[in-house]
Image (tube, rainbow, N blue to C red; front, side, top):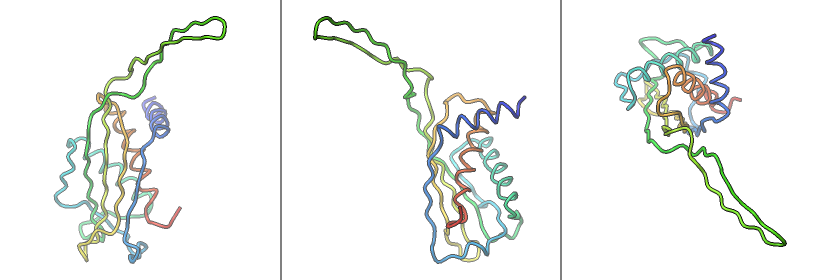
Length: 173
């Protein structure tokens, strides 16, 4: 049942979805990279729980693609986020109107629902360890409820990281 609820929530979040922009070094042969690890000093700006969620999800998705996590990697992965809180843009519209003849008059307004949302910009960098250069970067922008449950957060990060890694390596679809 827990898996089903996470799946349904994932589908819901994907439909609201994050947008992902990618930049990379066109001179790099990305097929040579087969191993990774995380940058030694990640300062993501997120909670330790969110850091662990991102690392676990990224590990799972990269290892499914044949990447190996080891102590002497070819790529370092770094990630960090910028967050801001705003009011939900979801509203319920209420209107009253009337008219007669060829004249109509109406008044309407919107009542906000859903509480506050966290607007998040998550950046993921892939750094060539040997050259100590950034070779690939993705920036995902999305939003989740301010008081999201751990399951909702996990579903959100699964959705976002899947979208990010779908664009790696560049040129593959």
